Length: 149
Image (tube, rainbow, N blue to C red; front, side, top):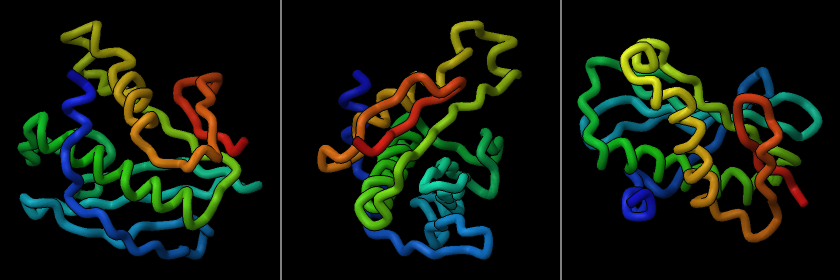
């Protein structure tokens, strides 16, 4: 089922990247089909290493005013995967880390939700086109990373 979910078309497939004064690489913000503001940032951790974060309406966590269906959420992840593929191709970082932070309110009501974002990102990372230059590193505490071979 996850394979079908990630076959979703992205909200957008061409991205403009900008360097901010902290040497982070920022995708120019854009709107999804519901006019929510999407932001994708690759935070520079030094030595060619980056950490990805994406936000809907300026929050990395659930915005309770956003009414995404599962299909919308998978379109969002497909969009982030597409941007990340372009980021890897353009900037060729040594490594890119992803961490799925758990929503404590969701875990409180449903124990199986713990680590859910990391499991989704584990599958998501397999959707990134890296042209064979990267390997998956699952030894990162609380996350996963792509490391250049």
